[in-house]
Image 1 (tube, rainbow, N blue to C red):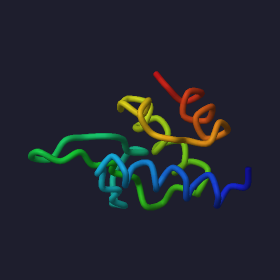
Image 2 (cartoon, one colour; image 1 turned 180 degrees about the vertical axis):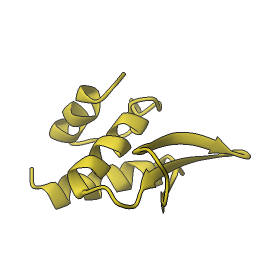
Image 3 (spheres, rainbow, N blue to C red; image 1 turned 90 degrees about the vertical axis):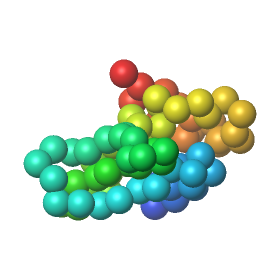
Length: 83
């Protein structure tokens, strides 16, 4: 799976889960957090696409994604980045 396709799949999963992705100037890579009643993935805007995908996958691994259709390669990528 190409990097843009993987990235688009990860973004789509976050969107389906109603998780906003924000790119910010922060001192670490980022991750999943709660702001009010909303879940947000905050990502360091200076990361490259591979690092960004890792942050999103790690965040999604903490969410309930079993009910979603996710291509096997994307599901494997998320599982690979679970804590």
